[in-house]
Image (cartoon, rainbow, N blue to C red; front, side, top):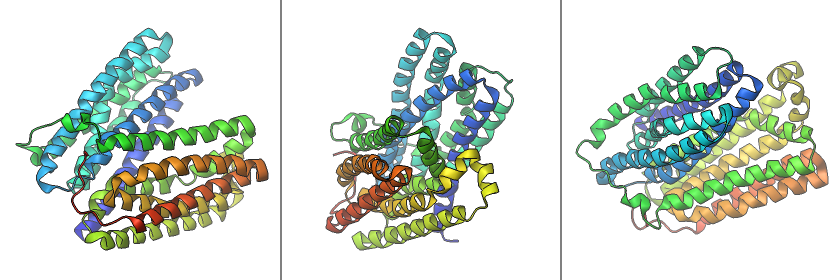
Length: 405
């Protein structure tokens, strides 16, 4: 296998390890906690997920766009340093809020504040390994993280409080953090950390944070809208159908997180587009194939996966499969723009995320839950088409992309 092929496989496996960690943490916490305890844990974990996404957008996405080989050591030293400082400040605020809140929910937020720098820095190291073209090192650290957190949670007693579970989850990141820093050390030896670019007006991460906020905000708005106008069955069916496509989310996340360093080294604009079109076609075929495989599942097996939700969710598989097929094309179009002109993606994300919400609600109003699913598919298709149109009109970059204006 070529070096590029090995890097791609390592990137996908690393994203799979990270996704498995998040899934297993929730599953084990649910099994260990009471209903109210898991509700407290879930609130804390949702907060962490938002902070994780913000750090990925502000720091991680700008790290993987760095093309100046001479600056990689300094960038990979500065990014973890900034994450540590920012997460310490956010953790202190969470600790204060947690101390003020009553009950175990407050103790859960207090525990998150204490461990936040550990978990965010450990996760953020993967972007440094990505831009250094050594994703196998990220895989080693994240695989250790998976093993440690599962082992630590399995040792907890049944009925453990949310605060205890959050603290154990966070502290279990220490071995992976130590391994990651040790693996990174040869690449940053002699480099100096500089936090000023992250505080400078015009830093690309500011735009990526807005994109993240809009994307997540629109999806939450869609769920809220369905909760108001639709039935619980409609919401459950849509979520159930989307859950079945979890493996494809791993691939999409890998393309977003680790694609820029690989694609950015292609030969010119034409080489970049040729590679991303191929990636998009592969993802589209996988999306359609996965949908076909799910649609062919026997009803008994489907009910084992989703229980009573299977009957409603299976009816949405053609629409959801179409959505994921075009999402593969759209993901790679946005990846192309990230490499050629990172500032071109914000307007697309804002406009078409809101359009998808409108199509979702409009589709439900006209054709019910099936219309809502096809509305999401239509929104994804329009977003992909607009992104590729923007790609065709984007000139080849005259200079290397940097992480600040």
